[in-house]
Length: 296
Image (tube, rainbow, N blue to C red; front, side, top):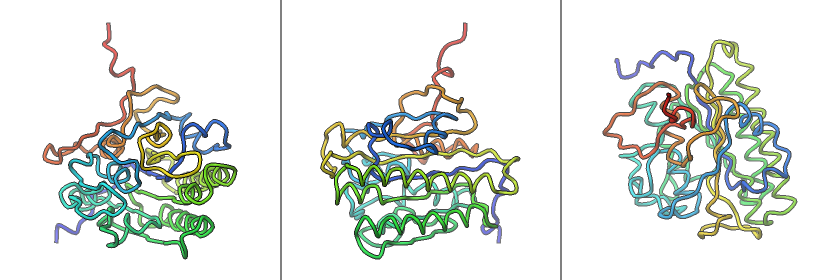
């Protein structure tokens, strides 16, 4: 009986929004007011995909979600077969199973959410919403992301009250693969930002929002070549980014260099959970530079 009891929520909450394939170098040229607001309330920092990790969605999202490198989670491609996610689960699963927290994950890319192509990455969150595209085209992915956003807004403002959520948006990446990183790609990034705005508005619409302490993390997995495509080692492909705001992150403050493995570590820290040493996480919470300067 006791194993089914959920831990009292408390004021801390975390929302992680994953937007696939957004190039950092193009962000200054685009209208992304909601991402800019997260960055202004905290930070936006580049992430370099490490040398051992292919610049592909599967391994990068696995690193982001688990807080360990490819050497541990074992995901080296977009087919997740051969993984060790049972030993190194994603943060929504770990929080739900080991800490009895309410968690939620939503998106439309099969390996992340379904037992297909070696998945799922998000194995057992408290609530999972898979809403796939009707076909593999940029237009169908925009519809998919719209439906995923609507579902996430409903859950975030409803009775489930998840303490940690992951929402995946995939249309930007799909547009780059089909159309390159031109006007349509840039428009898709701006559309994704508007969906981010709806998710942020959903948090503020919660009846308990004034008493809650929200951490918001927005992250991309990899970049793209100008013509679209990734998987190589060029700077455009290897450069990703993280934006975050919340308790302990000063508005506009600098942070130590950020890595993908740090995302899951910061989720745990934001919920005031000390990781078990047996988890052997490779990441650390986002650390403001000022905290590391010795005081006179």
